[in-house]
Figure 1 (spheres, rainbow over the protein chains, first blue to last red):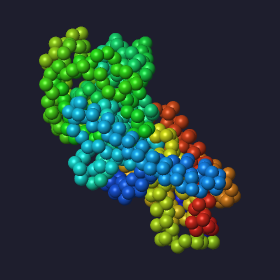
Figure 2 (tube, each protein chain N blue to C red; figure 1 turned 120 degrees about the horizontal axis):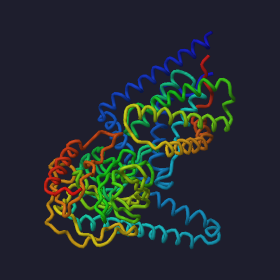
Figure 3 (tube, rainbow over the protein chains, first blue to last red; figure 1 turned 90 degrees about the vertical axis):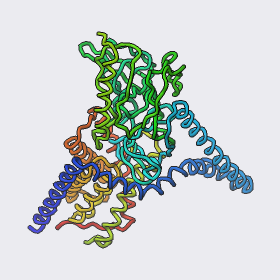
Figure 4 (tube, chains in turn purple, blue; figure 1 turned 45 degrees about the vertical axis):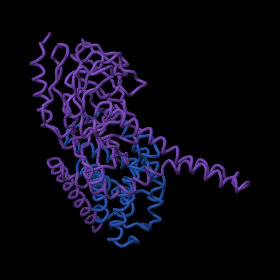
Amino acid sequence: MAVVENRSKLLLWSLLYFALSLALSAYSARNPGVAQIGVNLVGEVLRPLQFIVEGSGERVTGFWSYYVWLVDVRQENERIRERVEALEAENSRLREGENELKRLRKLLSAADERQIEGIAAEVIGYDPSNWVRAITVDKGTLVGISPGMPVIEGDAVVGQVIAVSPNTARVLLLTDHSSAVDALVQASRARGVVHGLGKEYSELRYVLQEDLVAVGDRIITSGMDGIFPKGLTVGIVSETRKAGAGMFQGIRVDPAADIPKLESVLIVTEGVTATELPVVSGKGDAATKGGAISGVAAVATRTQGASSSKPVAAQRTEGRATAAPPPVSTTSSLEKPLRSAAGSGASASSASAQKTVPEQR
Amino acid sequence: MSISIPGVRSFAVVLLLGVLASFLQGSVLRALLPGSAIVPNLSVAVVAFLAFHEVSLLGVALSFFLGLIFDLSSGVLLGPWAGAYVVVFALLSSLTQRVFTDSPLTAFIAVLIGSLVAQGVYLAMVLQFRTAELASVSSGVTIVLEALLSAFCAPLCFGLLKRLGFATSKRVG
């Protein structure tokens, strides 16, 4: 009887805790800032440990590879082993420095080319859950990072900042379920929205069946969402699928950024929005991440990359059937909506753009 | 029989283990494995261990707070993992009275079941409060792979937890 009572008591408390978790979930769904407070706190606490892990991972691997497997050699020749260790450690440090220099040069050269201003940051962690595709970087509000800022790697879109603490920031990746980027096909100028699927590739949606899209085409940001500067590479088309009765075709897009191997990213603080679409020679090349832009036809104006709600004035050089969907900002349905103002602002800009372009159907 | 570590201290130790598990999953395992690979959920193994060796109100509370720590690390919502771990604890603790709990195979099966149940409850709660598009096929693959990986790590986790001092079982009744 006592056993039954105790088990009943245990079950009752389990139900109470489950009800509490439901209440917490409902409350945090209405108040996303509550969950972010905890994330920021945990991020600040774990940041030093994450630095240590990220910084010494390769050194430990190199030490293991070059030391343990040479145990027999060490036993036979102690002096040579010590010399080899010292040289390899120095080699590893220099190589790592050279790789970092290349990465940062690549980041800054793409930013300089597009007159983009940003802050370089190192990736120090990934989301522990398998259901959220997000990374943590080592820069935060202390250097001017704020939620909503776009994040790029060279010329490629990585994602968007969704939460910040004084020294860290959380970036929702392009491949997350809740990620959406307003984009267009560079060659045919077909407009669509790149949705993350929680996988290594994404999907370009709302492209009409009659629009020309081929494997190998480069997908670039349209700039209409007011978040990502125009012309950044989102990915490369790897598969197209035209359904019989549907209005839109299915397009698989491989991200241009090497997301599994991200080490350094650039958080855009100010970006250039061209008032006319750049002229591009040829289709996008899957082997290169930089766009082969032969020239920008109009003067570029500088705008705030992620914090401005000012409508983007866009002029199109050619008329198009305006069946394209409204511009969509990278908001996370799992996270707090950040750019509702940008969505309405971009919608207004889309309307103004349509007014200046004769509709052709 | 009572647990060898006093209640408050064991509470702190288990919470610290929860933070460590989140850190391992988010940093160390991600650094060692390819970026897109699925990593095992070590917290589920801790919850399963509690269901075996701390079948009491303390065990329920620890499971809840372990889940809460995981929610804090993830930052999506506050509460889904906490609810999921409480369900797993209640389920496994009801079964442990009838099985031999010191077997590695038992640990494997318990964590496998626990991980499947935890992910199912988590997804149900997230989809209830947030709209998210989760492709059914890929979600199923993720669920199964994570459960298998977590189950393979279970005997090791159980051994480590026993060495930390959770050596004897406290059962209700």
